[in-house]
Length: 369
Image 1: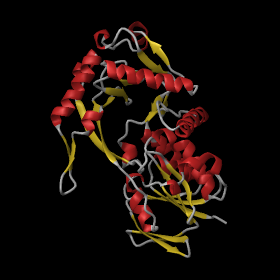
Image 2: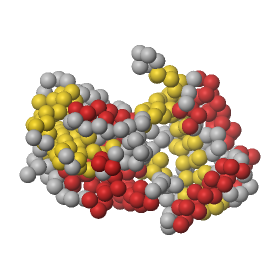
Image 3: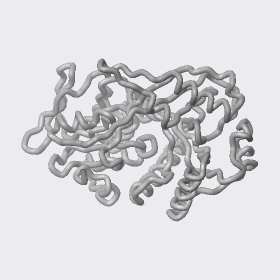
Image 4: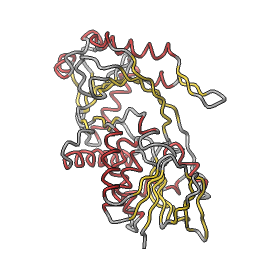
């Protein structure tokens, strides 16, 4: 019988798994090398979507995960971390437009909501947008997409888990796993503490491969850096996720905006000592692109630039659920954690307590790697 589960990581996955485990009556200890939401979950664009995801199993899983966010937000009074304003996207050249047409056709074929808007229709949705920054037509709109505030979601999930008896251990890294006879027996922490376990769930994000290695498992990862630019509060109406050719942006609460592009990711550099820096000229270029699209942003300044490490399994797909050769060791690791975490976390928690979730998790097993 599974009684004590150690969840490694206090980001969106760890919080979701812990909340589900405690709802099911398990005794849970959540351990993190830092603070809750202090890793990738605190530096993410957190766009909830299934826009062009392949293969079909991944798309369908993401759609169900989006619905799990809606249900949770609807169930919780003041559950204001979830924002479903839709996503606008357009391209700047023929190649980009062709790619966008292909994506829209593909998601429509899957039954996903998408439609084409004109410039005038977009300005009805986003009146502060510069009309000159928009094409006359072929602007894709995905109305059921949105974004979450990960820190607020994590706070809600962890507070619920703690109120049901979970222990939260912060600033204490996992240093070893005791494995004998094909079972994890204990988790050792940097503080010297030893936690006897019935099951372990690896929600360590970018550090998931290191935790797996402690269990004798090789988890291939191809993590990347993501650079996010946060503005000062600005009196501009931005109501949804926007993927423009030269800037991606969304609201970030209290009048702030969050800006990103793939180009700015490439401007992050890691020194030999592990220090991360970002080219200021690229940051300035992204901010200027935001100002060109939303002229009211002229008064905005850069409040912070954060660099997060995206956890991406080797084939790009999530790694979820139990390990055949180490059946009390479980994974909850993926890119798109903001989208998947609530639904996937519940399934992984159920399986950690002995419920077979093979129908839902078959496409995402560790063994495929």
